[in-house]
Image 1 (tube, helix red, strand yellow):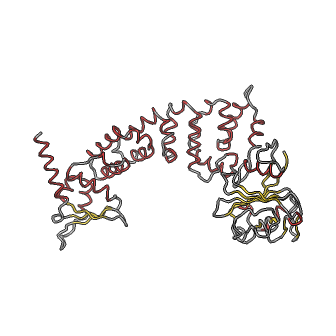
Image 2 (tube, rainbow, N blue to C red):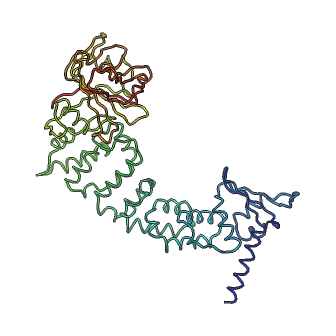
Image 3 (tube, rainbow, N blue to C red):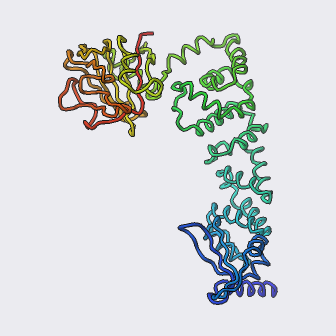
Length: 471
């Protein structure tokens, strides 16, 4: 008991020395602009307590200057707040972890290891495992990355290995799962307990792969060839570890088949034969027809948009069911074919029953129009009573739309060789750089209502022309 009192007194005295503004022989500059902070310290204490600081000091000793300072060292990669905690521990041997947030404890651990404070490293790991286990499970990626970046974090490494073996589902459901490394993901799915539910493993791997490619459409039915290739490249090291043959035919058809293009060709063909050509199972032809009938090759709209546009073409109400939506065949894409009026007319002249879909640059807005007649390049007006123009505020909420039908049928379209698709003056693609002077006039209407709130010029981020046919 007496010894503890003496140690407590010694600790208090050393902390008083740390806080003394007059007697010190080292200044330590911690952090990087704009967070630099200067600490005062004593060489003899730092030399004795930290092998890291001892090495730093041995190469930074200077002749005593007029201020009596022997050394000035810089630690730009250390956070001032964390260094202050470490410094007080070095002097006083005190560290009350309960008052620090969990993420700061991790930072203290990393810094303690860098400073060679092995007794503190061991203590911090034990504290985390004993008191912060649930938080560590929820933030598995942070713990995994931290533990395997340092050979001295053996307790945390063993914690991660045990969790991967015994509780893989908690890692899959952790808040930072999408951030785990490919190496960690592969190690995780190799464990036997992970493979007990193969369909969940597949779904989690897809979730991770899609998270690495945030530009992908939300629905695989809308993936382009490039989209599938991007996802395939991301998951190529993971797919060999998935035990597809543990799936039921229903699981394969519903969950895997829509992503079949990311599976290596040889494996894909074998899986299709094994799963689809079994007796009493759905045939590939039927699956292919069902899937293809609900897909559209678009970077702008989804299949749900095509259903709504099909109803508009057929003059059906929103609540009416449409048994056989139109097939949308892509004939022009700006990012693929160019954004010039000459390319538009080269591809689309003499093509009838076309839908123009336009993504407005620097906006979520989608514009479009339907021309049942053919496009021309002779500066003529195109006459039809069935054309319409429309807009969507964004891609996700298709109910937030404006439909505007032609009211002056003799002026429904204008076939100018210097413009892209032009629905009178109420939706016109025009300009040189991505149709940078496109506009929707709203005061002089050829259609029954304006589809934009402004007449300001806009540029086109992407546009697509589809030719529609009945299946």
